[in-house]
Image (tube, rainbow, N blue to C red):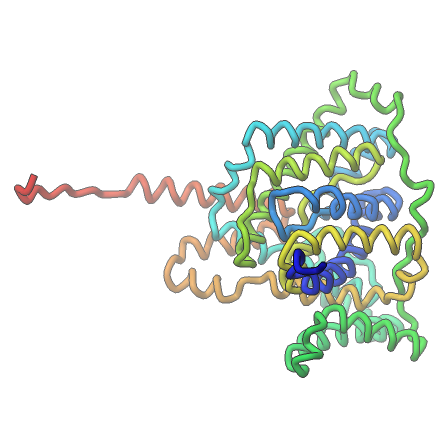
Length: 416
């Protein structure tokens, strides 16, 4: 019976790891966007069960993304939570149209250095941000603030026993994930991230450590489809600017992520137009449920690849676990310590930093290395979308410079 699913074991284990990574991201993005935490979980569930089943990028995982928090917060503040579903629904329809018009294939021309720079910048922001989460401290809003505020954060930990205990749980989780590769063969069959979270959960419960755990209520009552009044806002021009911004930013982040994920594995390449349609379908459903917008998320996607996923079954199953635990077993999530999940994300962020690629580019193509570094720094200082645009602008300028200085010499040897 299982012969038709040759990679079921790998995909099953990977789905559990992605689920554990997705929980804090779904909740955190929702809170940062100014909406109930459960709406982030709804978007994560749709990303797994709807977008996950569709063709496009086989190993990419979708859900609520940090890159949209600012624009979502502003939209909720201006139009209200009730209008969010309409905005996301219309943005999803626009993405479907762009996919059917085959606009997604344009993203195949993305410079490798820009993609690697995106991974590097995101990795740095994730590491810095999750250090605060591990210690139970409030993180600054910007990527640059997260990094520059680390010395003060460590000083605060030294003066707060609870914060230090929480941080040590996160650090211990990272240590287990790193050292898990040296475990015996049969033990290594369990993903290191899964083992680390399980050990941290057990240690927290047995020792009764004073650390925060995941807090999620049930999903019933949170899902509120937009009504006629919300759709009536489409009659005015103000809402349409937000719709277009949602669609363009979500599409760009998803396809940039797809290009990055393709560099992390040797499986089938992304079909960009189909991936655009898949993202549009997911956002259309999210809109009808009144949930947050979704994009492909590089953190979950890289965790999926690193955990050994082989087919799209892993991302679909991660949606099943989100639905099962958030809807029927929220008490089970309450057992998982937040610093353990932060430790998993710190390790995932570290693996996104392309140390070898930076060294290789610096030795052979310093212009490309410079683009990589500038892209990463821009993402830290500004945000992901604008940082990638800066990197793309530099890549285009570099190509134009090289083309304008190209010299061609024709030699006629008399051979016709």
